[in-house]
Each structure stands twice: as C-alpha cells, then as structure tokens.
Image 1 (tube, rainbow, N blue to C red):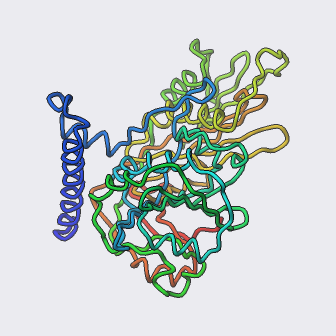
Image 2: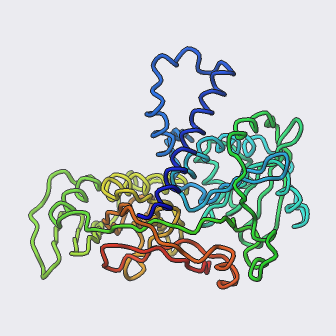
Image 3: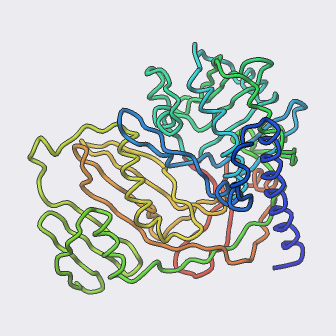
Length: 426
C-alpha cells in the first residue's frame, strides 16, 4: 500500500476514534452515562459501534431485527454544509448508529402525510437534517418492523429508497420519495429536533447531491451522493469450506440434527432425508428443497412480510453469515409469485455490491404457506486485501454513466477482486 493510502486509512481511523470520543464526551455532559463509566471500555465500544448494535424489536410477538441498512447517509448542518458517507462500511455504520433513532422517532410520530413538489423536497434537503438512501426499495411496513416505529396502516405498502428527516426549531418534519411513481411526500412529526445535536460531531466533508453539481447525468440520478473519494479497497475472495462442512452447516440451520447418509453424484454432494433434499456444489452453492407436501393445517402459518424476511435473515446469518468474513449480507427484496414468497439477500463489502458468478444471490429463501420450501445459499468468504484501487472520480463517473452507479466487485473466480463502478438499472 502506498504512503498516501496509508495516510488516508490512518486519517479515517483517527476520525472514527475522535467521533467516538466526542460522542462519549457529549454523553458525559448530559449525564446519560455517569453511572456506568467505571465499567465502560472505550475501545470495545468503538468496535461495537462499527459493527452495528441495533437491538431487535418485538412486533406482534415476533422478534424482528434489521436485515438491511441504508447505503448512503448524508447529514446537513445548519449552515447547509454536508457530511456524507456511502462507500465506507465502518464509517457508515458509525453514522447509522448515531442517526437511526432520529428516523425511528420521526416515522413513529408522523401524521397527515401529503404530497409535496420536487422543489419543496429539494428545498428541504438544503436545510438541516439527515438523509437515508437504501440500495434497493424497501416497504415502509418492513422498515417499521426494523425500527419499531408503529406507523399508520395506510402507509404499509409504500416502497421507498430515500427518506429525509428535516430538523425544525421545535419539531422535525419527514420527507420521502415513493419508489413506484417517484412522487414526494411530507409529514409533520411529534419528535423534537433536539436530537439533532447528537449529529454535530459529523463535520462537513464536501459531500454533495448530484443535482447540485450541474454535471451531465445528474438529472437521471439527482439524489446520488457525490464525494471526492477515489481509492477503494481490493477484496480477497476464497471458498468458505469443504462440501462436507457446508453440508453440516446447512443441515443444522434447516433444523435437521440427525444427518442421513450422503453421497457424491459427480462433483455434487447429495443428502436425501425423509422430507428434504440438500445438494452441495464445488463452488460453495447449497440448494435445499422440502419434498413432503404441506397437508397439515397446523403446520401452515400466516406470516407478515417482516416475519418472513426475519426468518430468512436468521437462516442466512446462521449459515453463510458465520463465515462471510468482512462482507455484509443485506436484504434486497421479497417477491410473490403463484403462492410463493421469495426473499433475496446480497453480499456487500466496502459499501459495494458483490456480483457472484451466474448472477447468483448470497441467499434465496422461499416460503410456501409460511413454511420454508426451498433455499439457495452461496457460501463465500471475503476479506480486505490491504491494497486499494484508484477509480475514476465520482464526478467523471456520473457523466460517463449518465445516471446512478454503485461500487461493485465481480466474484467470478479470481482470488483478488478489484473494485469498479457499475451502472444501476433498477
């Protein structure tokens, strides 16, 4: 790694530590942690904040934990200056842990949602507040389950990628863009704007929305974050285990604790039980299929979208998530077709999407009558190599792409994955 890259990484580490220490100092000033500082390890706290520590939320008796995080967070101060983070997982997670309660409170107390113009939306973005953008659309009902916001039922089917909490003098106001038709909506909230002070530690870093640059292509991706970051980490990709190990992990995660005999059919390791089939391939792909017919009414169950996503998240986290290394595995979508709900998760690292060979997902889990009927798990291990690649500056990439683009890694077999920009087509 060059000296310039070492300097950048050192500066980033120092920034996170300073933000953490500043957060602790502010907490001490408010008296929130006066009685626990004696047993409060600073370095350990920093590590936990980086990993993310959002607590599970119980909804109608089911425990729901977030299955995805926004890929972009932009914090605008009272002077209209911005701190923004996208392609940096550690810093994104740190900002998320400081800001997500603000979004939860605003959503939970919002009322009288009404359509606003795009000009009103942009005017709001220019003021003090915090902006979240998810890489894929997410239903507000699912977001509500993750945050425990208890939103009105009428908003459950609204799908969004972008949402903004605007800080007023006394109360916050919330704005979001509906994904299907692109319309914008706003609502007053009962949440106080006092929580904005928790974000004062994030100093401006020159972040801009694409529409503010006036560059060609910005009209097709007006709310994309543009920063000066040009170096992005290379990633090492390796097999996550032997076929026998992956079979053992898969049997356990699907609840089959007594393993039937297995055998090889060519290069595929096959295990057939009384009610299921599992196949393990050389590239780390595992397929699971339930073979019995669901005939007992007592076994079928009604699950909400959030509950199905949560079950799929737990299966994913307890299998491929145990050996995925530095990668995040995030919820991408849930689809319905002919009585079957299918949940998709993808691999992400350094804020970038990992594209597996043959366009596979990290995991694909299907539900029939509330029961997991089929699944595909792709076991891979991703770690930072310690080296970085300089990519085309984002301003130039925006003009070249003519629209929204994301950081990407193509895992087609090479051990070292080099980052690149990929245009977003959804």
